[in-house]
Image (cartoon, rainbow, N blue to C red; front, side):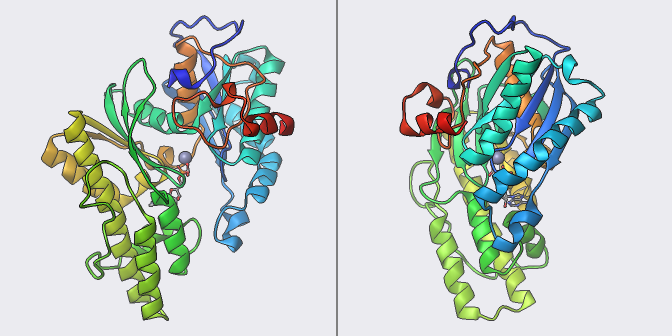
Length: 371
Ligand code: KG4
Ligand code: ZN
């Protein structure tokens, strides 16, 4: 994780473990503007999440321009609310951490620019955080027993990937989706079923009264070796079934939701089991928005018991996007002696552990202009 960022110039940060340090985290990579204060890298003093469901619901998905505009409107009040909740003033902060990517550039730039400006104004270190490092940090914060090396499964709206999370080196990618992310599949299937945005919680709710064995949907990549995932075939199978049964009754909708959820989560469970066996890892952390899914939590728990793997899920509110995870990941970097210059910019894509803002890519140059 550390090598995913540029080491600091004279930041004033000593790099020593600092139990009372207060880190403000800011997350704005997609459609949540979140701010949190974490003390000593572990204790959550405040967590505020400003969601935008109402803004995007009429469109059935996130509209990037609307997301960034809403972030601009909410960033000051959300950060202020987090400081109030923590009972501190900005002058008491030790450092600021903000998500630099991956995500929507316009959205990222709002939280990142605000965070850099605040750090500059207060003369405190700034640290840029990779969004996926944040998701993994949520599991580590919630369960101090979770110790590296462990197996990390990231399941969100933009990512479906397995990592070996080791000490002293960036997490090693073991497998990832070849097309849609699992959360993206939940969102698209919800739209096909006429369920509201965001799709994951809506499908989970509809599935409660459905039969997960009503439709035998494909478990993509199941019979194949390796640790990659694929979700576009499952989505297409569901689309064809919907068309064949239209118009959908309430019962049919519930059965389709339950059967899709079963297929989508089965694949995650079998891939995680294979990865744990293959890598010989005894601890598994499942993180990201889809990790809030009830069926996934139950199925993973069953598998973990059978395999004698220790399983960790952050609490649901730390699975979906939040700023506690960014503050926690930032605190880890700061304690390892890292801090980043104020020309650090946003990136829309980059594997966990790489240095996108050190490259001279066009995207990098353009993001600087936008910033
Ligand atoms: O991590 P996250 O909040 O944002 C990204 O980094 O993408 O994940 C959002 C994704 C969305 O696709 C949403 O539908 C899904 O997580 N999600 C769920 C549940 N809650 C959120 N999927 C299934 N079941 C849930 N309960
Ligand atoms: Zn996320």
